[in-house]
Structure formats: structure tokens, C-alpha cells
Length: 189
Image (cartoon, one colour):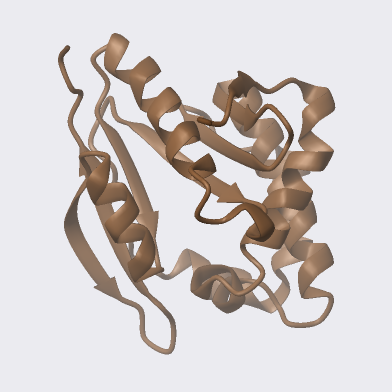
């Protein structure tokens, strides 16, 4: 059975942030950008901030039973509020400078960003990520949107390629992960 997808509300954010924290527990990017001390707590708090931001400036989708979440940011979305930026700086600690210095490529004008997608590890391989991704991309295709993303897990490149993304740039971050920037033009149906 294909997992059902719903638009998230503010009430869904705490559970969605927990799912993302669990999904990203060993993810190369978050392991590199978030201090090891209280890593899991910092990760969950950061995910909640970013999900609320995406809820205000994009689309956040959840799997009906709360086992997965995807967040898409609209083109031109502002940076998080000053209060959120201050909280992010505290949570990132001494890793913030490294994050800022990564030199990842700019996204094309007018592109939506798949900011995050994650599934409860107990549900990996059951189609939850594909359902979330398909639903979000269908919505973006309806408005003719190109979608971009970054991933530092080679397994994700395979998933995203199945959904029409192609690697455009691979960035080797000194003392950090390899990051693949991928783009998917709008699909016309």
C-alpha cells in the first residue's frame, strides 16, 4: 500500500522534527555541521526551526502516520528570523563558521529547494520517502517549478535520480563530507 501524504500544520512540527532527528542521526552532513556534544538534541531543535520556517515559506508534507516528512522552500524565501538565526548559532556552536565557509553553489533563480526529507529508520525501504517526494514534486510540476537539493549520502543520489534529479555539482568540502547538488526541471504532464 502506498503511504498517504498530508500537508503539515504547526501541530505536526514536533513529531516531524523527531523523525528527522532520527533519520539524520548518522547523516554525514549533520554529523559534520553539528557539534558532537548533545548532538541528538541539537539536531532535533534545528530540524524544528527549519521545519517551522519551511511551513511559513514553502510546503511541508508528512506521511499520514507521522513516519516521514519533506520540506520544500519556495524561491526567494527569506532567511530565518533574527531570533531563529540566534538560536541556530547557539545550536551550531563552533561548527557555524565551517558551515558558512562551505562554498556550495547558488541555486538557480526561481527554483524551489527540497530542504529536507527524512523517514523514521524503522520505515526505511517501505516507500515513505518516495511517496513524500512524488507528492511534493507533483505539486511543483503543476506550477512549472524547477527543484534543487543537496545531499551528502550517495544512496540518496540514487533515490533522487529515480525522481528525475541529476547531479549538477559535486563539492568536496575539506575535512568534511562530499555534497552533491542536484537539479530537477519541472516535468510537464
